[in-house]
Length: 465
Image (tube, rainbow, N blue to C red):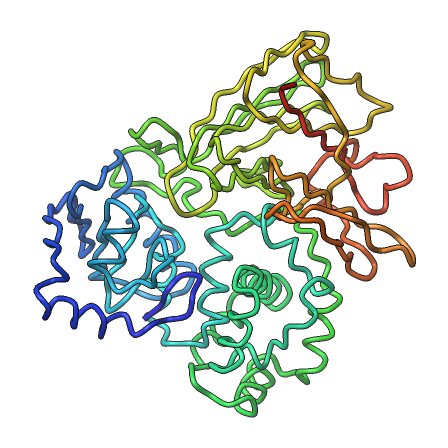
C-alpha cells in the first residue's frame, strides 16, 4: 500500500474496525461509475465534482506511464472522493493524505491524480523501498523547477541514500522532515534517469524490494549500475541539477480515445490544468490567483512543451494573491501543484507606467534588476517595501509572511529571515550556493553582484492600513 506524504498507518485495520462498529456512525458515500474503458474504471463517490475530461486524462496518463515503465497495466480502478474528510472515513489513506493507492485502487480527491497513478502503474514492477516509489511519483507529478531544485545534494546532505532505502531510514527521515524527504526522493529519481538512463532506473526499481537491510541495498545498487556505490553517490553530490528541459511531463499529445489530445484537455470546473501565457517586456503582466489558503502555485518558464525553472509561491490566508512580472519577454506556464483543487487564475497586461489598484489583495512583485527595469507604480494607498532577494526556485517563500532566503558566496552564508509561522529565524545557505535553472532568461538572473547565484528581486506589497 502506498500512502502519500506520511508514513503508512495501519489504515485498513482501522477502517475495518470502524465499519464493524456500524461504520463509525457515517453512511458510506454513494458510488456512480462515470467512465469505463479497456479495464479502467472511474467512479465518483458521493458528492465529488467530476470535471469534464478528467477520466480520459487519467487513462491517458496510465497509458503513457505504462509505456515509460515498460509494463502492461489493466484493471485499475479510480475512486474520486468529495474531500479529505470522506477520504479519511472511507479510504485506506493516512490522515493528512490527499490520495493513496492500494490493491489496484486509486483513492483521491483529485480528478486526475498523477502522483497516485504512478503508484498504480509502477506497482506492476514490484514493491520497492518507499524512497524509490515516492521518488518516481514526485518525479512525474511535480515540475522540476518548482520543487526539486530546492533539494540539491548540498541542501539535503544529511540524508543517507542507502539508509533511506530501508524501512527504518525512511521512517526516521519522515519524522524529521517529510516534505524535504519527498522532494529529495524526486530529485534522486531524476538524477538516476538523467545520468544513467531510464532502463537502469526501471531495473533498480524492479530489483530492490522493500524491507531489505543496508547491505543488500548497497549490493543491489552496485550490481545494477556496475560501479562502486561511493562513486555513484559522489556523482549524485556533484550532479548538475540545472535541467534544460523537464522531460517527465505527462500528457503532451497522447491521443485520448480519438478526441482531444490530453495536452489540451481542460477541466469543466472553471479552471484549466495549466495556463500558458506570454510576457512582453514592454508590458507588465499581472497574475491574479484565487484558491484555497496554503495552496501552492508555480510560474514556470515554458519551452518545448514542458516547463522548468520556476517560482513557487503559497496562497495566503485570504486565498488571493497577485503576482506582478516585470522583466524580459518570455513564455511561461502558471499551474497549481499536483494535488488538491486547482487555483483560479486571471491574467492582465498593463503599460509599465500604469497605476495598480490593489485594494486588499496581497501581492508579490518579481523583477529582474532594479537598474534595468522601471519600478512598479502603485496608487497612493499602497506601501511598497523590498523584503529581500530569493533564489530562482525558492520553494519556501510564503506570501504574507516575508521569508527571504538569500544564497550568499563565501563565509557569510546566513541571514535573518522569517519562517512560515512568522517567527524570526536564520536561513543557512548550502555550500557553494544554489545556481538558477538555465531555462529562465539570463536577464532574470542579472541582479547586481549576484550573477553567480541567480537572485531576483522580490517585493512584498500590502495595502496601507
